[in-house]
Image (cartoon, rainbow, N blue to C red; front, side, top):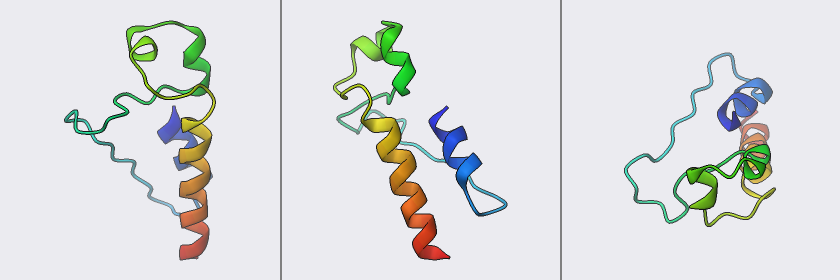
Length: 69
């Protein structure tokens, strides 16, 4: 869902989201903001604070896109 938000807000025709999937990131899985209320294994095991990661990712990528245009 985070990737879909990034793609929807992108000014580029083709936008691809790549993520780290080999377990090297300390954060692990990045749940969406609304996922924190579901208490899944991904949410319970997350070290991320609810409401921070998703807007941070989307807003930071948007800012990078703006600088490129």
